[in-house]
Length: 392
Figure 1: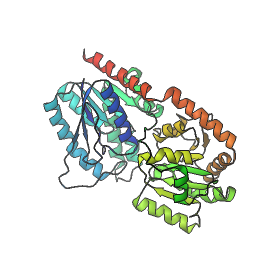
Figure 2: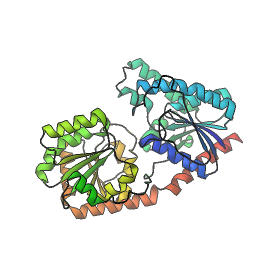
Figure 3: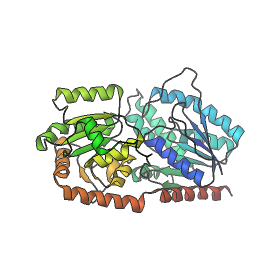
């Protein structure tokens, strides 16, 4: 099939939605579909057989859009719709696949050109806007919610990444139109020669026998780094030899957390490794004893959870729906998003190697059985076969 794929993000960029987009594109490519991808002007070039990348114009040279709703995102979306309209005229796709707010564009284009469309619901847009920093009045969020509902109700299929989003979609459409396809572990390039857990420990000044709790990801507020900062003094008091290593982030956010740690006198215990290439991640995971996901808000499961599970290392995560729809107490230590409870969970795993090994092994089995590339591709195949049947 010929597919117009609308992804209102930089592509490619190493973060949640672009990684999910790449997984879908790779699956569509493997299944023999031809795809025109329309995305933002920024991001690394990717070569995927059968996929042609088109980037929206950027006449004023605006910098990359940050994660989440923003003025820059709105700016690029203004250029995305007319570009998508032009691609509909010139490329004549049989299906439109719209990710997040591009689902609205897919809805309108599908009506104009009388083709089916997929609303790829990687998040609940109305909820995102309600919790964003954009000055949107309540009536504006209500309007977006009504639009989102109408677009979901009209979609040929709604693609979700977790049960929470499937539940939202079920308010507007029938169960047979909802296709839930969870993410899978990230695939990493080979590590650079000479990069080892020991070399990273030496770089960061971590003793060879010090237990390590590792966080990977951006430093946005919703990720819960503030919870880690609150728990850090208690963790150090309970396990003085432990190290908390935070990988990711940059700019003002990273500088602010560094300063916070210095002021608390924890610079030797809470270490910031900065943003790292994907090729470093497997080595960092081997170095770690416990993996952290302290997320505080949101409903979709963080993509990194599946990568965490695949490592065979124990996980400490907040016991919120964003985690509990994928994690259970048999594969992770779940704790309320409160500093004492989170500290207790982390200290328990840092001190109990047998429990760490048990949880880690169970998590790896879960991924092997339920979240892998063949299963992901097979689900994408079923989705598009259903759409092909609807055309004929």
